[in-house]
Length: 441
Length: 60
Image (cartoon, rainbow over all chains, first blue to last red; front, side, top):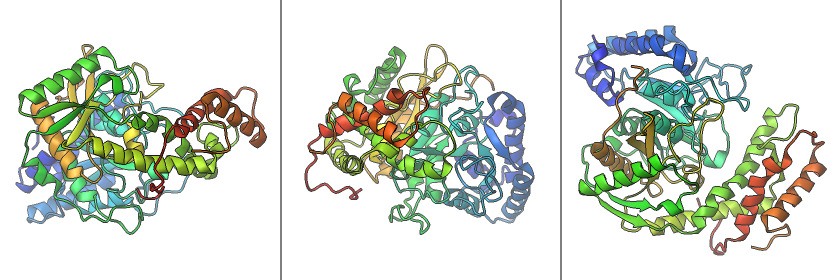
């Protein structure tokens, strides 16, 4: 039986335990249930849980494993999905609390289930302009970030080792950074968006939040790849992302200077980034300052013109009331919307030119640690430009701020180089270390 | 870029506010300036870029 001593088990470790028959999918699920019972009354990470179904699935997977049959690399690993993903038989609350239960799983959910992962339930997100009651496991008075609030909190609280998230601006990396865990927002189109309730079609990304970079690689290897149900999915065949974890090598890192950050970072965050750069260089990495094109600064602003897409989407969700930020997108002149899309193409090219000779860029994931209060989910300013450009990004822990809250670092890679991003992130994680469970544990 | 709308943030904001009043029956408690300023800034930022002609919007 997996004991409490194994509190910090990652998804990769869980999958290995199951394959070696040192733990069963049923045991791993009961471990998740115990964590949820102990901590979710405070953390409030879940919007819907179906334990009866999860237990039935885990029993089947346990029987199969006992006979040496494994559905895939995540056989028996518990996971969660943000309440933006369609899950068969469950309401997608982002679509509306009174909407009909989904008929089919989102592609990402379906691929994980087909590979043997056990869906425990759906995690919270802001709805109707209001944040969820979800609390940061590192301190209940602080936000876990958003909008993948529950996914970040559930992973950080060690309820599940991995969770599906979504990022339009900064919604996957920010909660991971605030909660002290890892996350990836791969290249636009790398993971199918079929069955993901849209926010802004051209910058919505399926993200993954996990306890380690290897966990991100494990899950990405299962869910990435072309999908006929998502015409924007990349045609590239799935890569062997986990292989990159076995070949860690010092990365060539471009350090984005303080003066290029879109807003003033807090001193603790600046210290954290500088210290990380020093440690990475001392460990053999090639770390050098990089000056990004001035046009990148405009990207953080221009992204607002994509509200035209949000307005088109909101049309069917419209109720009574005053025009809000999404409806304001109705006013975007069509030529400006087209020019914003052209700017995205061009600025992406300029950034990739600036990355010559580098594997990744390094900068903070947020201006600081998770802000106090649950009314706001923090700033996406450091994350949003990369979502606009569709470039792959990941966050790893940079350590703790003096007040004991996690600080997250962000890595950015070239379009389609998700494997290179994960390889660099794994090396950075190996040098800087992962955060252990929060003190609530 | 040359478009038939104002190019500075202030001009763009005034243009958007006027369009908002033409489009909706705006409630008095609606802070249009707060809602529309990010878009006005975006429009102004876009007019500062000299995007090469070869760049197509869908090549992404």
